[in-house]
Length: 637
Image 1 (cartoon, helix red, strand yellow):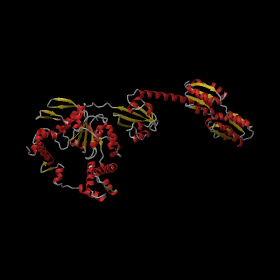
Image 2 (spheres, helix red, strand yellow):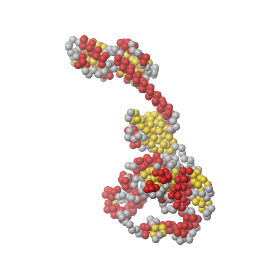
Image 3 (tube, helix red, strand yellow):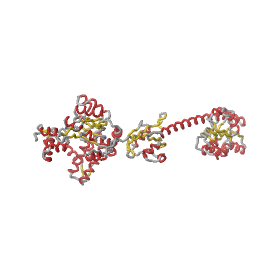
Image 4 (cartoon, rainbow, N blue to C red):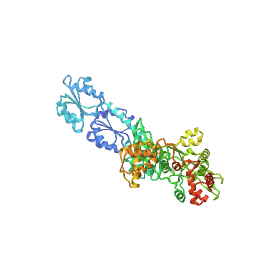
């Protein structure tokens, strides 16, 4: 019985309905019934598949309580009520009689101006419960009503009170309006069912996990793929908060999407050890957010190395240990660093981490690797600083060892299928830049000596504290590698711009060194404020070292502001230009034309390996040719 079930309370309304053109409506049944029958009839109509019920007055009220489908009420029009008002005035004996209308408030149209229009004292007594009709009649009589208009119960009580009464009789206009409303509602319901069916068909045939989210953040619908992603039964997800099922989602971001503050939210999550791209997009209907659609798609894992190869890489230290969760405290007010880092982890294209020395650049690089599909493969981190072009070439691309007569692989090949971080990319020579660009574009490594081409699948993360655009303008950086890197650029703010993080890190470092040296001090608020106001140009590196020095040399139970200020002045005096030879040695600065740090390393290696150049070169990670040049530079033999 799909369609509209119509119930009318009297024969006159039923006859009026029969005179109407009912073919234009999706009427499943039309019955004239008593109020005592309405509950049974309404439930039967619902069981037989009726979509909507049309009823009037008390019958409509009882039907609403009995069924779960919509009930459209027959509301008497102003014209119908006006005819009843005129009839009631004729029955009254006074010139301006009191006429009482008794019934449910939802039964009637607007009668605000009836007193003026019909020259009567029009009063309406609204029923709030089914048993209230008799009391309403008595109240109307007490207040001087001469004629009462109402349904059967009202008519019966009015007659017992000796009052003139008129039955609420409709001419059919009110029923026609109710049927029009019901037909529009039925059309909307069928369209919604159609769209829901299409949506569910789309969901159930999608290769991605999908869920419909309500405005309160609870899950309303899911497909089987979503249930598989979260490893729960479909029904177990319904009604639960999305952030309780997909636990690594940022709650603030989800609520921003549902409130309309954010157009969408996308990130990558590790869902049960599977890299999954997830997105949340609002359902915007006429400018109102009616919920959101969650979409989760598993990413195909990067080709995994053989187990013995993985073990070899780990033994060489090619592993990243830091996760994004470890850095949340460092970027409490700069959440975009974490969000963009997760998004960039989806890609295998080269990217740039920009920021000052001493910031979390290396740690963020590790996080990106560990959040990517390459996380089970090598993570290699190298620096271009202090190397000439030849040494950079050998480090990245490898070299032929003439003593051992074998080729030594470079770090690019060592990082194959994984990630390589190239620090201080601004120090890379132009020829090295060219070869690296060609290698990345061709996805292969050419071994010039053997004329051999090796397939290469590696993700490059470059870092720099310099202005690469200015270097490009000055001709020190090739345009191709510049645009390759800056298109996916992530800026790491210096510590002085992150006061909230600085506050947490001070506490963390001090606690770490208190524990390490079993020295426990109290840092006063004054001392803390001195540290918070200091610029920390060396960022985390400087802060960590300073905290260790402070703990070692404080000497007093309470660390006060003047102590912190004096130590900062002693260690990092502003504007010092002259450095001692010891400072220069520690910083590998050039003294008398010689790089003393490099010289010290060569002399140490010569003693350790008794002049064996092959073993020295292997330990230093350079070719024997480069070793020979360095030894010649310092007159060593």
